[in-house]
Amino acid sequence: MLSPVIEVEALTKEYRSRAAVSDLTVTVHPGRVTGFLGPNGSGKTTTMRCVLGLTRPTSGTTRVLGRPYRDLAHPMRRVGALVDPRARHPGRSAYAHLLALARSNALPASRVDDVIELVGLESVAHDRVGGFSLGMGQRLGIAAALLGDPDVLLLDEPVNGLDPEGIRWMRELLRDLADEGRTVLVSSHLMSEMEDTADHLVVLGRGRLLADVPMSDLLGAHSAVRVRSPQAPLLAAALQRAGAAIELQIDGSLRVEGLDTDQVGDVAFLSGVRVHELTQVTASLEAAYLALTGDDVEYRAAAR
Amino acid sequence: MRGVPFSAVVGSEWTKLWSVRSTWWATGVFVLVVGAVGALAAASTDTADRPEVAVQTALIGFGFGQLALLVVGLLTVTAEFASGSAVSTLTAVPRRTRLLLAKTVVVVVWCLLLAVVLAALCFLAARTLTAVPGGVPPTDPAVLRTLGLQAGAAALVGVLGIALGTVLRSTAGAVMVGTALVLVLPPVLALSGPRWAERLAQALPMVRVGQDAFFSVPTSWPVGMAVVAAWAVGAWVLGAVLHERRDV
Image 1 (cartoon, chains in turn green, orange):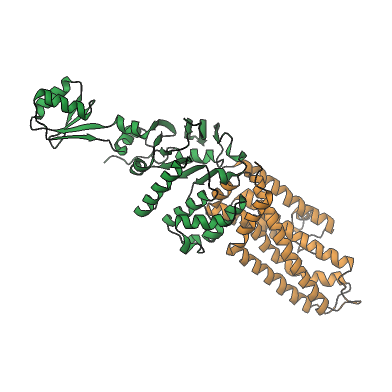
Image 2 (cartoon, one colour; image 1 turned 60 degrees about the vertical axis):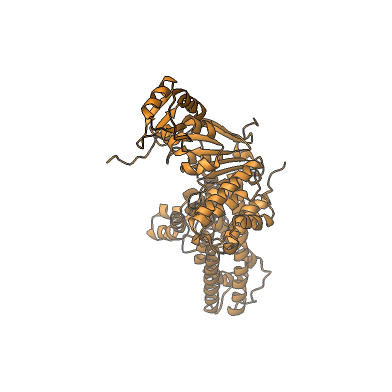
């Protein structure tokens, strides 16, 4: 595996008495999309802000490409960041906003036109950004992040406010960027979005690391086989003897954990049980995520 | 690899300055107030004993107009925090004192440019509208000093604006504190009477018109300019230290 590009070591950030991030150690690697997942208030944004040098950690260190963010010679050429879609002066045009950013890192003005075209904002480039919708704001934020053609991308909730077409566009963009060997860290509280985008997941809950795993592992750990049979009780008994955990579903089918489809099929054949349906059920990331974060939600609606 | 040159950061701040309307509004107010008041003051002053007195009378609009430069300066910082654009800016330029220096260069140049142009116009008004024995020669050292001090005072007010904006991070707060320091407190203290209040007024960064304190306790121009410069630089350094330490 390539060496880590983003390193967070024993990071703690406290606001007054509340710890936003507690002793977080995690690394992010190039060439894949890393999903940064967690409920609201779990510390995703705080961690990203610390990595970008916007927020001072209470303790611990963060490094990008081997050094603190502030020490990067050309920050925008190395790292593209989207932290807050409202992070711009409402009275400035999209073009002027990007031009000022480009100039600050000695990037050619032609890059501004390039990224405006890339995100599809040509028609509104000279309008004041105060009138932009959230989705247009996100596109402008992405344009700013891509200005320096950076090796590393840190995007906080980039699909927030995008329409379905925009979400698909974003997904493909992130995929392409990762395939080019760049490091992509994307935060989201939308599990369904991550499921289609990320290769690797870092899950936070209440500022602590809950999981740092490949997407397939997390999904695999919570996947099962669905089998439907007119002789369900017989089959269930046979499967249990084979070591599986069985759960009877409301539609009469069985949910089998601990065996794959081949094994379930073989058990049914050997027991002489007829099978009408045999399906691999991949757990939704949502279910896996809820299983992980169930106890670590900071803000929860009161049970009624 | 060598880093981004400082001139690039200055260029970026220059782009930001001209690309918002507030800059042009404040500049318009400055030009209007200083120009109109200067012309009126010169026109209503028939005669003056010495050329620098005639010029100083025409510069009287600077007394109020400089507030617009204070606002230009503080907005370059507070507008970033009000809108959240400070996040974009500091991600692009993480070396914060360098960023503040670039902002200061841009604001000082802008304030100097405006002040020089307006001071020249005020000089022309005095020269054409006020009768002075021997005329108002542009090469008179006292006249040149008066005009130069005015441009210097305007630049210092811009720096004070940036500094207050950086320390307070709030447009309303910085405008209030800035106006109190340069325009409200000095005359109020001067009028209140006691000796200590007069001393205090002299120690405030009061707005200056040419060589004189505007509506406040007079000080010689070297003392007055030194006080204003000390406040501007002191507040700037405090702002830079806080800027380095604080979260965005």
